Image (cartoon, rainbow, N blue to C red):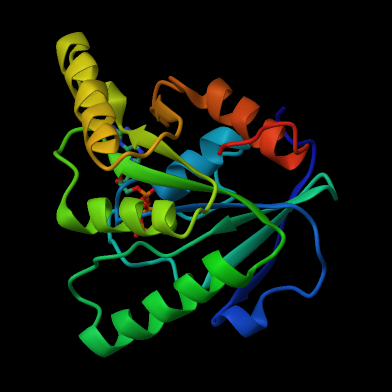
Amino acid sequence: MIPQSATFILSAPTFNDCPSETLPEVCFAGRSNVGKSSMINAVVNRKKLVKTSNMPGKTRGFNYFKMDEKWFLVDLPGYGYAKVSKSEREKWDKEAQKFYTQRTSLRLILLIVDSRHDPGVLDTDQIFWLAENQLPFAILLSKADKLTNNQKVATLARMKRLLKNMNIETPIILTSAETKQGIEDVRALIDDFINENYDIS
Ligand SMILES: Nc1nc2c(ncn2[C@@H]2O[C@H](COP(=O)(O)OP(=O)(O)OP(=O)(O)O)[C@@H](O)[C@H]2O)c(=O)[nH]1
Ligand SMILES: [Mg+2]
């Protein structure tokens, strides 16, 4: 469902600054510049709820948006951005891990992976870590508008194979914030998790 109201709540620099209010939460994560913010705008059907840019590394902290007074959407900074110092990155990784494992209202992690490239070691590590910690997540392959039909089939097969090799079963959706391919499916997935009628295990 497209939210009627979508409001920015706060940007929490650390896990401890996240809202004390508990509503079901869905977060968007993935490498820097993979299209997280664009995906969010497409899913909530707003042109500029979240800032997008050609300059990776713009998003800082846990950015909270309230949807229909019913659930929180959280935009996370991208991982692997080269221009952020190693110590900054490590600090953020710790905050993100705390968030994933301790935020009890977190219902679903949408991990965005660029459909045009082989998932790199950062993506595979992240996928493995989420699965190992038994966290509810789905994979959104982004920027599908840049692919031919053959490439779309290949990228889906590649991701399926990777998950199978890791013994992981989780939804994969091919998406584009440009053409809106898959966006309806992402909305349906979110609805299912918000309403708790989906069991990923
Ligand atoms: N062709 C195409 N380009 C896209 C799509 N989604 C995002 N982009 C482009 O990719 C770039 C990065 O998009 P963002 O949405 O800002 O990416 P992000 O993951 O939020 O980036 P950070 O917050 O910096 O980590 C921008 O130039 C977007 O226009 C898509 O579906 N198709
Ligand atoms: Mg962003």
